[in-house]
Length: 189
Image: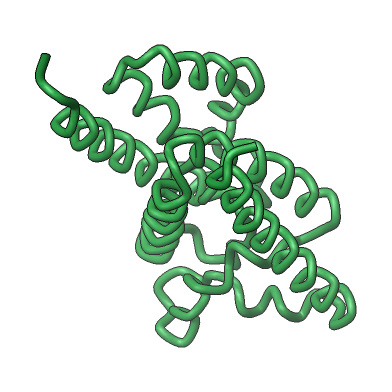
């Protein structure tokens, strides 16, 4: 295994472990930490942009997010740890600000905004960059996570489709930006 893969796994593992520890603390406090989630348009809860990805409503919510995050995060890191960190941060900030400005008035929690950002990044990057590697990764992503498109539909009041939408939008922008930058850096033949 390459050192860059090991480094990526360490960072992804740390994020997962941190999120797990926060959830255990939240269970201990009977869910009261979710009050630090993202509450749209409330300046007193603007700090929720920082906290919301690490808070989850249940064990099922946490585990499903950690699995998807780990798989998609590792696929993004195939372009390097710095790329993973950049897409992670863009998705985090993009989904957080989008939900804070436009979201429904209730607490939004969970990694799903970042997950949708990673997902959208991988798909858009493949469409724009068109390398064999990026297309193969996009095919794997669509096979494993193609059903994520249904997460944009406001079918359940307890699902933050706004987080999904703004995370995906941030991922689209990241995929577009990085694919153009990578194409410009290719050697001319």
